[in-house]
View: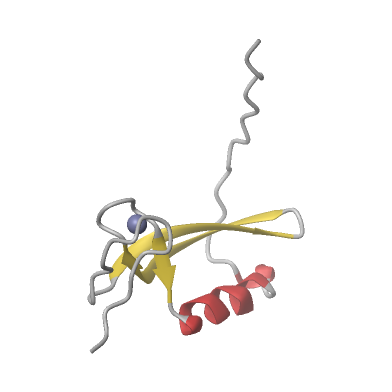
Length: 82
Ligand SMILES: [Zn+2]
């Protein structure tokens, strides 16, 4: 199998996927997905999702009424330095 490289740091991506938590937002609404399988760059931590995971997340975001639980997400604005 051909190796894939991280597009940010050029490290070889692991073949095995890990389960990660993903934060997304869509039309001003915030979503957190748990147990999303992704290949995680061991050097810089960039996460790569399969097309299937991405479309599943997109699909779930369109039916917000069926969310199992809601969490509050603090939005913190940092003051620009200087
Ligand atoms: Zn990387």
